[in-house]
Length: 82
Image 1 (cartoon, rainbow, N blue to C red):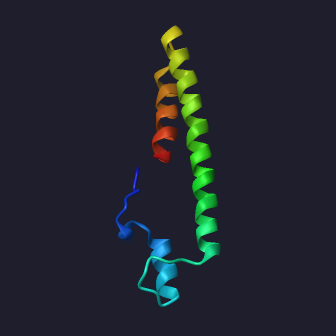
Image 2: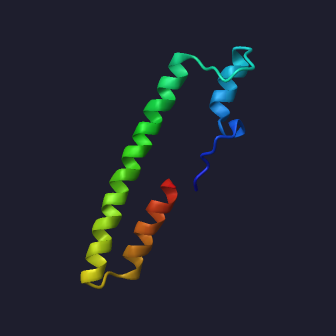
C-alpha cells in the first residue's frame, strides 16, 4: 500500500508536530525531521533489499519451476512494503 502524496493530510506526524508547537506553517523540529529521515532510509533500504530478492527469484522462476506457494509468499512480502 503506497500512501505517499504531496498532500499534507497524509503527513500526520509532521502535522502533529506543527500543531504541538502552535505553528500553522509546514515547520517541524530538527529532531522530528531527523527521525523521519532515518525511518525513511530504513524502509528504503528494506524495499531495495526485497526488490533484489524478488529479482533473484524472478530469474530463478524462469529457469526452474518454483511452487506457487513460494511465489505467493514473496509477492505478499513485497506488497506489504508498498
